[in-house]
Image (cartoon, rainbow, N blue to C red; front, side, top):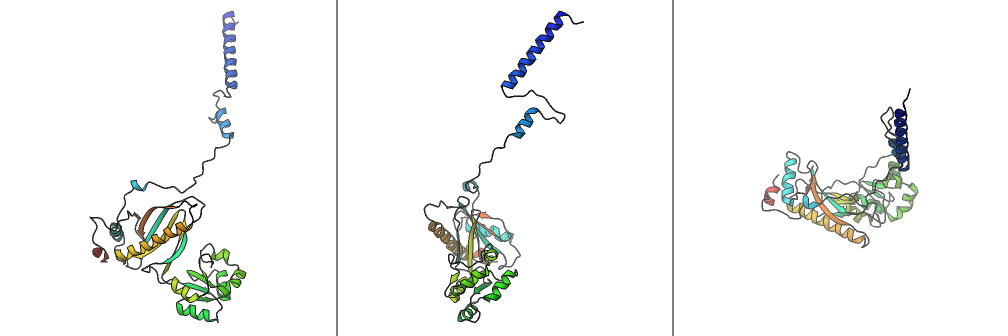
Length: 296
């Protein structure tokens, strides 16, 4: 039998518990009740709430170049040659990667140029023009490896793309459009276009300009291009890099003042070597001489 003291204690405890629960409900909280799984009521409520979206980055991620170790051109060549020991002087290629400070989904840099010292002279060029015309004969004499119209279109549709560059004579543009090769050649950067100067009137001079020429294109804020063979001297490599950088700066300037695009870093690497950030100097006091670096 309950005594009056026990009844009063029980009543007081019940009142305090009810007041505590009411305060929790008023504060939009739940008591620390756990299910058999170990989750609480609060866990389920947080799970039902929509997740906050991450703020999208406007530009590509960049780092402070001042914190990185940078090298002169001759020092970079010395270290790269150490990674390429025992390999043919014509097989490995020097590559330049130009990192840009730019926004995503903005206009990109794309062009082609002829370097002072050609890197790859084995380029295969396709010329779309009437096969029995004087333009076809001139293209073959200039060094084109594939010439024609319907035969070229059929080969591309069958998946046989046996060329690295493609130009089209202006008289064959209609047939090219009728063939509808844009979905195949476009993603590969091979579709002739007046914008990039690959729809021409004089195919012979265009082919001669492409032989030994190089193309570059910005992807994800970086422009990459092969600028030399392992057997190039430092002076030859320097001439190619200067020409390449001059063309990129000119391309950026042509985009207009409304496009904010700047060069952030220049990195030299090779086929089998890592990248070395360049500081803009030809050589440092500790660098070997250019003559020593020219010896394979």
